Image (tube, rainbow, N blue to C red; front, side, top):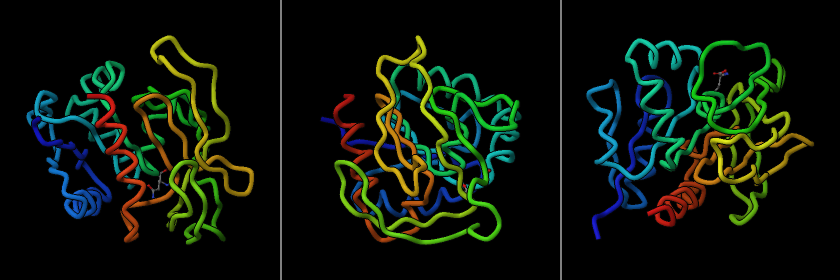
Length: 201
Ligand code: GLN
């Protein structure tokens, strides 16, 4: 069997850190910086990193990546969106009308933790994974899950709740979290994504 390969959207934000984690777990990756790099036949999953969602969306549009990436996800390409990546995948975002990928049935609140709690660290439980370190940086959270749309074959499964807010969820092959698992040494969340990719093959 061909070894797995994961594409990482590298327009802006913490893509290099995701690549390092994949290296540590022995998974090959490639960086997608523009439309020419978007070669879905060469990879099995996609990571959309944290960063600044508005900047990422602008570059995605400029590079004409929005439609091909959305189509691939809707056709089942496994995707892992962290922080800003989660915002890009959300069907609804508070006070935001900018075009997004909008493939996952969640409503997201941006910069949800306010100024005081802008960035923080905690350790918390994720269903099926256990207690893991979590670094939040001007993080969004999931306000609520939405009714399943026709483009999705499964409902949203909540994986972690912190102080009454959903901070990790999965819908079929789409996995999202509010925090930055690539900024800690723990490899379990990435391994969980890789298991989704393996199952999808
Ligand atoms: N606040 C950022 C945004 O709205 C997300 C922060 C992050 O990815 N660390 O895009």
